[in-house]
Amino acid sequence: MFYREAGDFKTSYAEDNQTFPIKFDRYRYYVVLAVAVLIVPFVINDYWANSLLIPFLIYAIAAIGLNILVGYCGQVSLGTGGFMAVGAYSTYKLMTAFPWMDMVSVTLLSGLITALVGVLFGLPSLRIKGFYLAVATLAAQFFLVWLFNRVPWFYNYSASGQINAPERTMFGMAVTGPNAEVWVKYLFCLFFVVLLAWLARNLTRGSIGRQWMAIRDMDIAAEIIGVNPLRAKLTAFAISSFFVGVAGALLFSVYLGAVEVGEAYGINKSFLVLFMIIIGGLGSIFGAFAGAAFMMLLPVFLKIVGVDMMGWPADIVAHFQLVIVGALIIFFLVVEPHGLAQLWRLAKEKLRLWPFPY
Amino acid sequence: MSMIQYQPYQTEDGRTIGNTLMEMKNITLRFGGVVAIKDISLDIREGEIRAIIGPNGAGKSSMLNVISGFYHPQDGEVWYKGEPRPQMRPYQVARLGIARTFQNIALFEGMSVLDNIMTGRLNHMSASILDQMIWWGKAEREEVANRERAEEIIDFLEIQAIRKTPVGRLPYGLKKRVELARALVAEPSLLLLDEPMAGMNVEEKEDMSRFILDVNDEFGTTIALIEHDMGVVMDLSDRVVVMDYGKKIGDGTPDEVRNNQEVIDAYLGVAHD
Image (tube, rainbow over all chains, first blue to last red; front, top):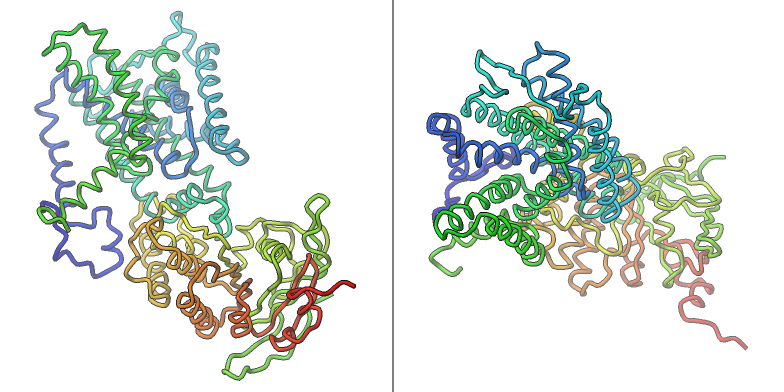
């Protein structure tokens, strides 16, 4: 009903290949983008930015990255936290070693360094699959956290073992450090989200995206029609790690400011991002956004309902959150492995015909 | 050494059968103690439809797997387009212009029909990952150009109506057709079909036979196929190889093979006295 595709005819293959082939979708996307850029920065306040919007944007990047690897290429990874740590420590080293460098370059370079590390830990995927690969990437997670804890060079021999983001400015405004305003941080993260989501969409609709999906669905058939499995898997690891590295860098430099590696980038982070894409939808960029939004909204929602409205103790609400997430994971794995994104697609299919049954 | 030389000739229906395209020389393939293929030689000529038949377990699929690079024979050589082919991985074989379908459908279930077919075009696409990230420019031009080729095959195989349907939702007969489309769209010079008509009803078999003949006729594609339906094999193919227990027991035109005593024995059994 609200979803109109009638009369929207395509006359070229380029038009048919658009990200949003239906006009209604396209305009909705432009409206969301315009609101995010032109309106949100003026109405944003500290609470909503720090508890919801900025972490949502950062985790959306990580979720897109992991979705490229797990959802599109079918290679399970539990090393997300470790790769985010690589991004964070690269940022820290770059910021302190080259104080003149601007933050966009620092963040992108951190992503590139993470991509290299990702390829290195992706090498076992050429020989092992599924559960065993998950265990191999788990080794990456623990090794990387151990490395950043034990080698003082990474945290510049600071006494606490923590890393702290120094203040850096862009166009005269602080982006990192304690003096940065939330709307600047928000726009900085939004820039990366829009850029990287666009890149991810381009990759997944083109030849390399089809190669990843071919490897995921049936690797033998993929090889027989000419997909080089080595290249496909390693590019997936590289690009996925790039995204995850950028997310880890932003989480450290823009959001947290000070980081202790085991706490901020432990195994919990790996699971958090994995849950996001399972709930949001494997193999869908919209799903990555939906999953990140859901996992960020849930604690806020529960806090408002449980603590503020019902007056329950905060620790019970926090535990309740774990129970809900666990139950949802089981629900989605059993009932709808393609997550919220698939539910959204089904809703659209139903709405096309509404109010008629068929 | 070189490949067997043939004189080109015209068939009754006006197709040209050329010189040797591929030749297998004394192939022996062992899995541990089991000998799957025993010293088999066979050649495939340009433009012909070549059938490989034989009872279950005769080594027919193993033969195709040797051609497409899944198995590496312990002995023997594979010659292709006048040169001996070094040991290759399957994706390198695909780049030589050899495409195939599988006995049990091997489509990408999570992708649409169109995406499945477009994946078959990947050897014709050269945009780098950087180009593809930016999309505008080379990647988009290439995508559109290859989409046109894919659409031609979609028209050819009459699957326009399902191009955006996820493959997982299709019935068996259509899946077989989509798999053929994915192999065809690569514009192969040699097309290997592993039991293209297994599990089909008469009508679907007729459709598939028509497509195979049309592919061979219109595109001049050389086809090697494995099939159990003798009626279809004898009707379609120019030459037939018969295998039994990993050995070649007959090779020639359908008529020659039909009257070969060894072949009759293999299929009907012999009285042991």
